[in-house]
Length: 90
Image (cartoon, rainbow, N blue to C red; front, top):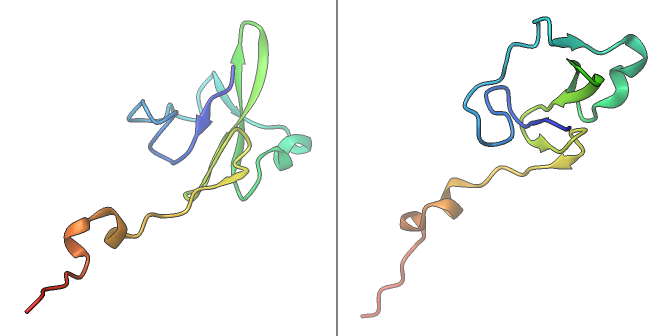
């Protein structure tokens, strides 16, 4: 099982909130595993019946299981066609 947290408030693009990382199920990674997450992602462990599983809480602009994929911001002019300049023939 892999949970990808892309932003502080989103988990897997479907859930509106992230479960608190400081609960009995979400624990910080051990010192030796802190480098598991890349690009400044925060490593945490989810305790399950099958054992502990490492996951990453990615900083804004990164995604992926280990925060290894750059997610460029979309420029507002590209996402809103009404902001494009228009040519008018006279």
